[in-house]
Image 1: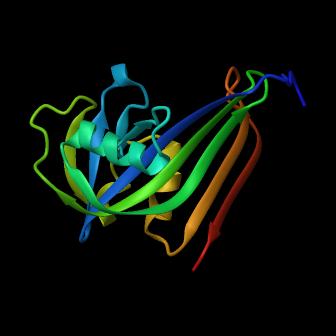
Image 2: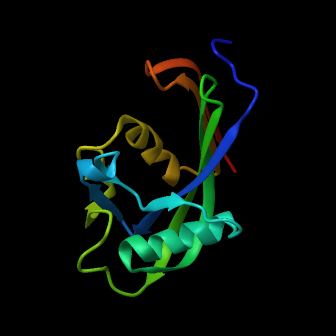
Length: 163
C-alpha cells in the first residue's frame, strides 16, 4: 500500500442523532468550526470516559439536552495509511432527552428538522450518506481507506446488519 507507516494513531469520536417523533435535531456548523453544514452533535471521546458517556456528554455540551434513552447504531472509520491514522466515529441514536436547548450553542445554530426534509439541507457528503443509517433497524459499519492529501479513496466498505 502507498506510503504505509507502522505507527498508528487512533482517534475516537462520537455522533449522536437526536430524534423526537418525525423530527431530528441538527446543528448548522459554520466554516470556522470545520465540516460546515448541518450535522448531528458529537465530538472527541475524552480518556478514560466510556464511548457512550462521551456521546451523552457531547450532546449536553453542544445542545444543553440530557440524553435519557440512547442506542448504539454503528461505526464509521476512516483510515489514512500515509499518516498512520485511524479515525473512528461511534454513532448513537437518542430517542428521549430532557432539558432546554442552549440559547447560544458553541458549535452552531440548533434546528429541529423534519426527517423527510433533512437531506435537502447543506451537509457534508459523508454525513448525508450516514444519515439514513441511523433510522434503519440494526447497526451499520462504514469504513474508508483514503489518502487525505489527495482525497483519493482506496477502499470503501458500507454494511448494514439488520436485527
